[in-house]
Image 1 (cartoon, helix red, strand yellow):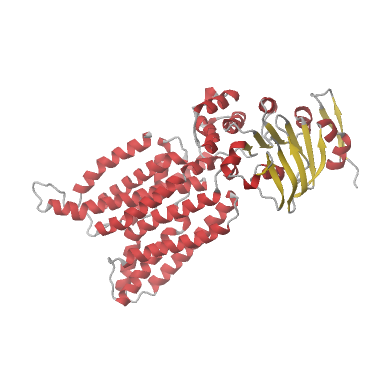
Image 2 (tube, rainbow over the protein chains, first blue to last red):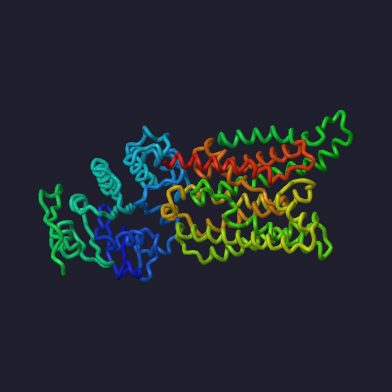
Amino acid sequence: MTLTAEALMLTGRLQRVSAAFMPGHITAICGPNGAGKSSLLHALAGLLSPASGTVRLDGAPLAQMRARERARRIGFLPQSAEVAWDVPVRSLVALGRMPHGDRSSPPVDAALAAMDLQHVAQRRVLTLSGGERARVLLARVLAGEPRWILADEPLAALDLAHQAAMLRHFRTSAAAGTGVVLVLHDLAAAMNHADRVLVLTQGAVAADGSPDHALDAAVIKRVWNVDAQWIGDTGARALVTMGRGGSS
Amino acid sequence: MSRATAIFAALLALALPLSLLAGRVWLNPAEVPNTALILTELRLPRALLAIIIGAGLGMAGAAMQGYLRNPLADPGLFGIAPSAALGAVAALWLGREAGFAAGTWAVPLFALAGAGGAMAVLALIAGRTPPGLGRGIALFTLAGLMISSLAGALTALAISLAPNAFVMSEIVLWLNGALTDRGWREVWLAAPLVALGGALLWQARDALDGLTLGGEVARSLGVDPRRLLWLLVAGVGLTVGAGVAVAGIIGFVGLVVPHLVRPLTDERPSQLLLPSALAGALLVLVADSVVRVLPLVVELRLGIALSLVGAPFFLWLLLRLRRGWA
């Protein structure tokens, strides 16, 4: 029950990246702009074919898996919240059932309930607020009952309260045994909510381990070139930056 | 059956008998001699042809808008119709030289060959398109536009080089699209092709729904972009190509119809396909009946009539969308 990347190469984006992801954990992928975070996530989701290297799901190469089989196991939440048609919330969430070839309602109902969306199930999606829409899009992923959830910057367009709610939902999924992999820009969110952090820089792994270890001040200095310091207690830490580091 | 499907099926069932009776001569079986003959040999095939062509164009339009995730998309974007028209024009042009006149099998068959040629070029590009959906769609649409421009330019060239004024007027008239003097032969030619094309587009319905959330999500849901592209090229090619082959260019149906249908559905592309086919059939049937009864010296060409209605509608749509964006 693992998702692993083995020496992934993608010209200009990933340089022999290897990493193993665990079910039941939240793993955050962090790094500066252009570090290859999104490329790695797309490769893990089977949406990007690496030039060399392999992504394995439960030991089997992802590239050789049938698209539907892959889709049943991996739920992908992109950064964009764009919805082309003003469909009812319930129909949108039911799209998550596509890989299963059914529009079966219990998982759709469960996903709507988990995201606290029953009261808007019949509403049109474009009439919802940004926060509600983000929940609908995650509910769509949950309706597919995937064993892995891969989300690209799921907190990017959300206010503080919705960010916290979203992170709680990811924790609930992880507690139920789902492997959660998040690309996060917000290092404090990664520090406080991830079980593990993978830091990328220039397409290569710069640090990989517990948040304390992977995001310590030395790594932040080395990767982001910023002098910073963590304050507060475990689980509620804040990052204080002290201006840009010296030019090198 | 969805609400939209029921509404348009009922309207179509109502319009068909009226269309059979309407024309230069209003058919009253008690008074008009040869009523049965007029019905079975003239009006029934013409009405059926209107239904077949309209259904194909409506469904192709709905599928294209779903595929391109854009309410302004039209089946014409693949360049199928102008290519089919070029084929027909070639038949009319050569026909004068070789001695076969318009109205024989040559025109529809050449038009189908034209549509097939456009599909082949698109398929060639599809085979080389990277598997991602976003860039692929843009590339593909541009290719369709180029095919369209090329076919249009060649058609214009054929008109300007026409061997005589008669051929020139024949070509121009044909390009305007009409169902005048069409019979069972055209019905038998178009029906199976449109049915096959419609069946292919129907196969794409789930994938089109998946595209609601963008190409990446569709792929993550297991949609095979290449299969979807093939279904669209073949489906639109057959429905539109067969329509042009028997009736000339009939514009705007594919663009307008999904907009008429969308407010009656939950907007999922899959829910638009069937009602758009019915609404397209209804629109072309009614339009063809109207041009038949209009008291003009010469029957207004169907293609012109639909464009006269379609273009203002399109402008209205643009204005409404602009207000939506503002």
